[in-house]
Length: 321
Image (cartoon, rainbow, N blue to C red; front, top):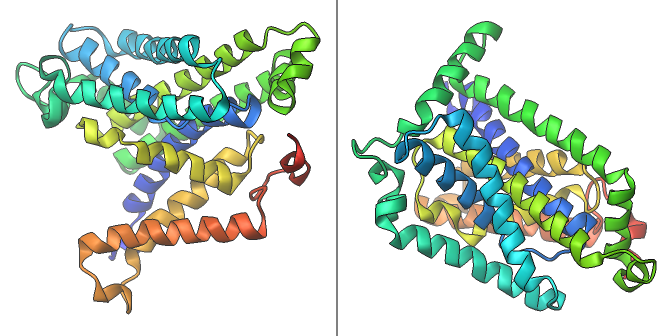
């Protein structure tokens, strides 16, 4: 059976799409609803993954205690970043977020005794195992697999990730229908008008940044549980731009557009690896990886030209200031 028709492969693609859904949902809250141009979302994903791994492996904490604290740490990272940068103009704020994500990555690379450095989490624990922090999660995953009769661990993780993603999507959708969510939209459309109505726009933007960071932290947890081993190179700025691609594909300001964009992106990004015909066969395998990104970029560029609001976006919102 070829990998193209392999159920386990596409289950894995679905898991990654679910993780990207949670990551991009945080970006949707920050930019799609609050208008915060964040190019450093991957930093909070890294904070969540590393915090959980460090607490479990180095401190011996339970995964179920370390995981929520890791999400809190990611949200705290968002609060820290926002307190010092949210008053900047949008383009300067975007530059600061990129710098922040790179600072987090370089700290993870150089703090070898804390994070395992460039060797990744395989060097994190005293016994040098990459999956030590993953043991309690694996037992939980095994119980779910046995209870529901899933055929593989990938299928089990697929069900778990998307269950959590749908719950988070529903909660975010409900939150955006409250007065709090409507204030965020007002700030996105015209911050001065929202401020003239007595709204503390800085506080609302700070809350949106922290909430989006917490969602990225949850994505980091699932990334750690799925791959067991990760290193600072896994949290490069490219992951943030993957999330931006998902927003562009699905549509800005639409909660339920995020999983649509993530699914389409995952299918395109995974499916392009099977282009084993000319002119793709003229290139080496490592060069084809870059071709895949070029193809995905061209598809998104075409979508922006033909349907700039995305698959489920509202074109009327594109004309708002």
